[in-house]
Length: 333
Ligand code: NAD
Ligand code: UD1
Image (cartoon, rainbow, N blue to C red; front, side, top):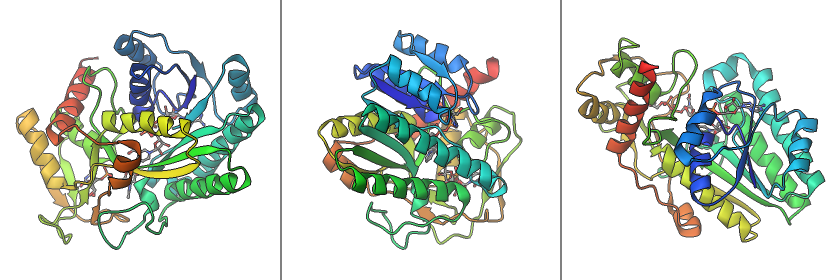
């Protein structure tokens, strides 16, 4: 059985679907701080399975121990954490506390129960401002905000842990920019309040909940002046976790992989692709650069392809269509 912490969130819920479809049993621990309990019903509708769920905090070690006592947990996929960059600058203590202490609590319980397999949700943010593109896993790491630093610190903690016990199997997965939603439209990205990220903002403009998109910067040294990112369909990303777990099963030790497509799209390319899908509903204006943003960021997916057999297959159109579909279904609720 695989324990998914934060498994009702955006990436965790899509990963639950992929794991179940690949034949794994999963149990979810989530404190609902950034997700809704309805996701559990949606997962049942999609998979036909009632997924065991525990409402609670990863930092509650007694609760996590109870989960390990009542279930044979073979591996933990650790999604739980806070993830908003801007908020992390305003609330550093909350970010360090939740992200780092949750991880330490889990690792302590895993040690106690002899559970050796751990998959960690890291981020391309750990590369800071990379000097050349594409980004390879051995590039230097750095962070520019508390959120990014929690990811970096946890990666370091995991490396130290592996030095202390090399019978552990740990996969550090550095996600690029996940967008899109499950084709059913039942699960997707559902941020609280006004979205900070590009795709959830676009979908809210397309459905009339927000007036227009501000495109942050049109003076970057890129083909159209707007920022370039490696957008990856969340279902492709989710499959990467299934492959990472299979890799751990072969006693991999500590491994680190980029999960991206290797292709960068600009903000305007995303807006144009989305407008083709929704019938030109996304109005935008140019605005100043967003502080802390970089011009270009895209992965080399070669290592994950070679060692995991990972390859993103969903098109940009599919990413836009499924994002729009999820938002539309949501609007009706
Ligand atoms: P999300 O907020 O949708 O999901 C995280 C889930 O964890 C939520 O359901 C939340 O309720 C839960 N949670 C938070 N703290 C918890 C705690 N202490 N105990 C139990 N549950 C807790 O975020 P997501 O987009 O699905 O991201 C998942 C992971 O991937 C996060 O660690 C995030 O930092 C990382 N990541 C996300 C992105 C992205 O673009 N979405 C990019 C890179 C890395
Ligand atoms: C951001 C975080 C990153 C985190 C990732 C996923 C920052 C600086 N980086 O990445 O650490 O891992 O989210 O949570 O916050 N854009 C607009 N208008 C908008 C929103 C975005 O033009 O309203 C542009 C941005 O300038 C950028 C691109 O769209 O060029 C993507 O932005 P976003 O979706 O926020 O992701 P990142 O900044 O890449």
